[in-house]
Length: 274
Image (tube, rainbow, N blue to C red; front, side):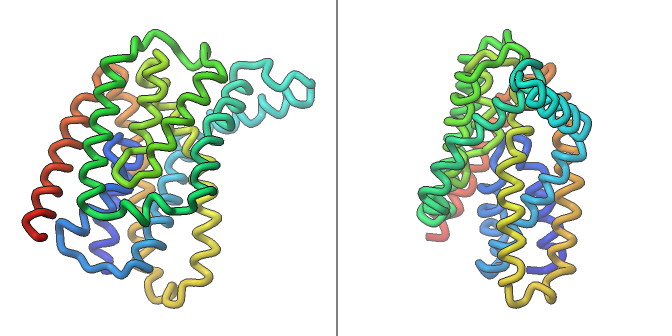
């Protein structure tokens, strides 16, 4: 992997982790389109690192929210009223929403990516992402805020996150769809989606640290990985800020159209090369 490839893929990760067009899909398809022969071990470690980079973007953007939610949750626990405040209830809903995908991910431990991690499958799953986004717009009434959220909503959104185990199905797209099909408005569904990414990304970050110590040529690739990490963190932060503002006034249809177009392009290229 070159520094230029790292920078480009870092930008791709930062944009697509939060914009609902699938970061995992783009990290497979962009190198495929450009014909980059990146060693699988390098790609594996890089993909985990840039996910950690986008975690830093979530922390940076939602820092005030995270501190407030954490402080109020512990206050309510000390008072033996663990869900008395809306912020502490939100914390428990984030935990509940994380459980379904975490359990499935542990049980199958990467099986989804190993089986379906090919340009053809990823292209098809991108179109599934498009279908989810259209369903969110067609089915959701967008009449509720996070203050009205309940544990059924949290489980429902968590079940949608399971779909993101398939490379090409956007995690943010699936979870925003889960929220919107429970009639939560777009910005609040996106906010919950971004906050619930924190436990998954923290786990990925810890896993990355273990993998890095076992990676034989990590010191040689460190400058390359750092370039991708920095660009992913910066573009991730900017994409969160842009998307939340965008969703306040506009629909998800443009992202659905993009997923179909990009998926079809890659499917055509795959068939032509095959």
